[in-house]
Amino acid sequence: MKIINKVAILISWPRELDMFLEFAKSIKGYIIVIDDLVYTQNERFENGKKILNLLNNKKIEYVLLSQVIGKIKYKVVFSTAEAYQEKVTYYSYFKYIYSISIGSFIQLSGLSRLFVNFFSHPLTGGGINAKTFIRHPVEREIGIKIIKYPKGLDINKALYPKNQWRSIFDYYLCHSEIDCNLITDKFPEAKCIKIGYPKYNSLLPKDSAKNIIYGDIASINPSKPLILWMPTLIKINGEIIDNIKVWSPVISRLLDKFNVLISLHPKLVVLEPEIANYLAELGLLVDVKKGRNLSVLYQASDLVLCDYGASVLSAVYMKKKLILLNSPSEKYINWRGERKYVDDDVRNDVSSFNINEGDSLVTQINKDIQNSDNTKTDNLKKKYFGNEVNQKDIVKIIKDLVS
Image 1 (cartoon, helix red, strand yellow):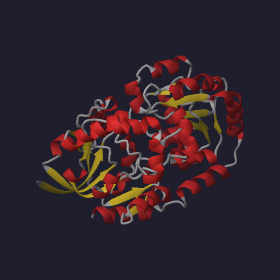
Image 2 (image 1 turned 135 degrees about the vertical axis):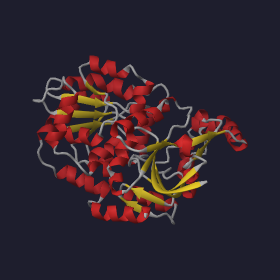
Image 3 (image 1 turned 120 degrees about the vertical axis):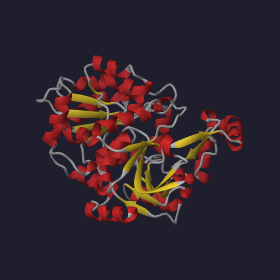
Image 4 (image 1 turned 90 degrees about the horizontal axis):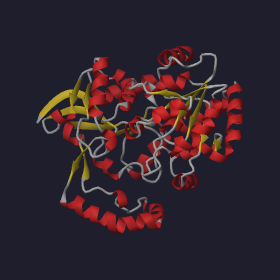
């Protein structure tokens, strides 16, 4: 096994480039490792090729994971824990049998929620969605010192962090005290470093960000305020685009007064490619640019509409005016009631609406757009992310980590 005295950044999804590149400015001589492994998940189709194209355009050095694994180890590896090898073993096969029998009963009967409360785990083994293979982590196969990079604060408070991470990562970078405390509660020995959201720290002036968006989307009207709609990817069979379909007729009512730009999740574009045309026919502006810098999108917007997921906390961090749209899905209704995810907690602090409250939503958007007081957004960021992180301190810490 060849050891290379270099820092590697493992990239599994195109959006991770946006996450890593600003952070990586403090690392001298790093190399990108593109996850080009073959996966059974449809949404991962040609992920490696998409990342490769983005890096070629940016002229950034890279290697392929398939060419490195089992042959080379780097001194330090940063990873979001999204890469893995699909391996069928005796253990994985027997786990699969358990999952589709006992596990599926636990899942369908609702006992999984009870088990999460008592054991912090649903004990379903994946239930009806179980696979015959195990997901074997790759980080220890390609690195010596392994550092977990956070991919968002939209985390399940009962299940975060994953138990297998204990044996993988030497350090955990965290967005705030929230994810740091969840990690140390489960792994008391864990070494955590709070870094905020580096990808949102070097921001363009708002006018410059708007000019970029206006230049990319010719049909936008510069005289109207810009509303950014950031729907999450619904990971429920048969409901993947329901959060968009149920809200799009209501959101369309805003078009007389506002530009409404919807940013589709990259996985959704792969799984439901017709959704972009459907939204465009309604008159909504659809952002389809590959490798879009999300900080530019948020910075250009005058108000953000979200439902769930990372975009909720990103908008909070960026101190944007924020309104949340509730999903009518029974599962999401239960999650909101249980405050299962960190982004569910934000509903205590900002306006949120159900689908039958369209008139109230439109009224609230008009009111928030006209409000110039930033006290609420400032306080909301401080509540979830604490005091501002000193970026000079973070740069020094990262240099020490990779030295």
